[in-house]
Image (cartoon, rainbow, N blue to C red; front, top):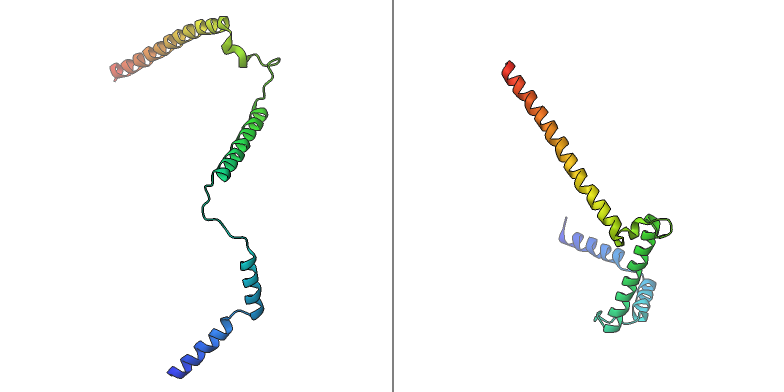
Length: 125
């Protein structure tokens, strides 16, 4: 390939890649008609407005999720207000200590049985 042949190929490619005149006019009008964009995004008014919108959206979303998941009906569900009842809390705490002690006894009995089984196996070998 000669140099002249390469230059001719490049010129033909340039003509093929050039945009249409109508496209150039339309693009120029479109770009010049666009409103100017302020590069300073954090104006106080905009920042507060967008923060308020975000907070309201998150609050509404959490309220809807709360209603969907469990809801709040104090007439049907007294468990939500159980932490305010001192007598119920004392009764529940008394049961908890007994249950913990019983679980500890069961665990130790099972542990002693397992140790006895291991010792028997060691002796019989």
